[in-house]
Image (cartoon, rainbow, N blue to C red; front, side, top):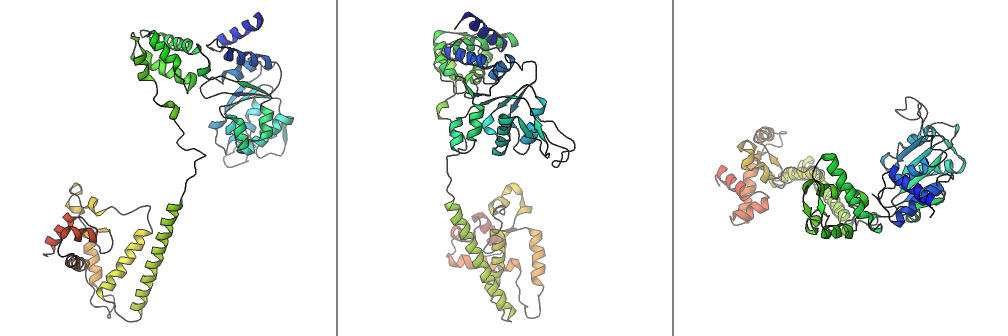
Length: 436
């Protein structure tokens, strides 16, 4: 590398506040300077937090387009439904809310440079439009049939493995080759050697100067701990950790033990919350759903048979009538699994007071308030027709249900309460209430 190139690289580092002397970083900057005057598409690849956004600016400022516009677009931050409009513009009335014509980034930056950050996040339809721009410099506004011309240079960046994205069918292969005419690899921090320590000193001094705090001093063990860490979050993560140390350890001389308190634990084992390669098995959920459907069908069938018996003039036994009422309540309860009724134990607790006490309806876990019991009793006590004179009140039905349950369980309260799906405390209160 000659002296002219070295001086040029030094000027670039000063202009864009790039800290580091590692060969891999210097090589990436040199590559950006070499391609800058040549109007080729460039793809910048690097992990998150490595400072990829500086390289498109280096390319633009050292190109023939440096006096024209430079626009940076974060493709991952624009909703899929509006990204075509943002990039290529739209005509008035092209869609709901398009009250006027809109210039897109390709029209605004005509003659300049567009930086497409997170380019791998572009939807496939937008990728097809972008490919047309790269090939012939033409595009269509959303809602327009008039071809627009643009003279633009595209610099893209991504932290993903583009070859893998192409294999998965998430990125067009032809667009990938168009974008990566020249590829620049930004090295991760763990490959930059002593640059880690240079950045640590820089961030420490900047923090102390900005917030007027006493500077932190690192001993040799602390320096070894910082330079030996892999920094999966790269420069961004290093800055966050150093600023925490500068804040809480201001004026202190710290060792490796102190440094480790601020380093993340098990960062190598961190994984995304949802991984695309994880396949979920819904067999269990499907079986439960089918079981619920079959139960509902059986309940409906039984209820129809009982109703047909009633309509034929045969008055069913009181227990059969109670079963019909229970079936209706069960179907209502089972058909709404998303919003289940509150449990009896919650409504009957001391926290809600006596006004919330309720009674148990046989065969269900539904709670009926005192006022509702009164109204329901009045309705049930009124004969439906002359052939149905012996309808029992809810209280009488409830009392009879508890008596029969006690008889079946030999008077053992805990077993009786479990069968009735109520608490033992509630059963004891009901026994006292009905004088059993």
